[in-house]
Length: 441
Image (cartoon, rainbow, N blue to C red; front, side, top):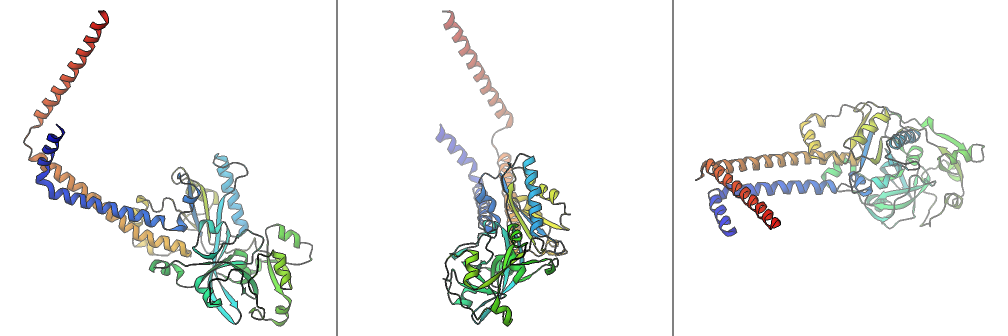
């Protein structure tokens, strides 16, 4: 019976075999494009911090980019954290004592010195759990904790390591930034490729604490004001309190101060062990200057991993609690939904105005990479949509042709179905009647 039905189906579909082959090929191409999109999105480490936090989709990753004119400080970030955490607690999505996974960063530049060699590099001044949200590929060593009391650790890229030391096996070595020794805890590999280079990774880049960038480098923000830096000399009454309130520490070498030499080339430091902050300063014969930068502006990016089980919940909450005018003061992006089918269709619809920059925002390299892939994947999604539409039209064509060339009539099919239904109902009645007879007997 089954073989007979299969034979009938094959015979019925034989006139449409070419169209069916085309239909299968079109669906296969659409599947390949969809798989490529999913694989590419999963390969963007800076957009997938929410996946590593939970795999059930109940959390999202929100990125907030600030207008250059906004004076966003570390204290402002603490205030934002408090507002958002309080709102989540009121919504029963966080409990008392829970913390937010967040990071912030500011773009800028520093000059690195080792011996007689100096290198000008782009720098990211970071805070919070930056390396959790941005797991840069390590070649050797490890990341540093931006929230640690020690603010003298840096992560540099391979190119910079080879220019300064002729090797990438340099964990524990010191480089000088504005004459201040900073210790290399990790060496990373920059992303390669046309998009990565265009996004800002064509030149060397290092990662330092926000405090180091503010004190010893240059911050790329019109809101940065160096007069906001509060310096408290060692031994003053407020030195201990400044340290307790999350301040950082800057080093001032007595020999460098007297001579005015800030290159750091007069002092050579080899590989060192994991010294404490005080041990490092003491070993170099330097005095401590405690510096509070909590009210220094210049932060350009603020990121969160937070509950987002309902679509756009996290984005709406952030916009409401921060109190800024979206797309004028801030740009808010949700990494979990930005590569969805609907979002990419909207990206395609926004051509060419999407490429126009009418506001004072500067995106970091990871956001530029994401935006570049958004443009590419938007085209892929449109092609995928065209293929699905073509497959649907092909299927309709096949069905209509088959129906028009049928050797049966609809009323005959309806009559057969009615007969089948009648036979089934009669069979059920007979079974019930037989059951009643058995019970009475």
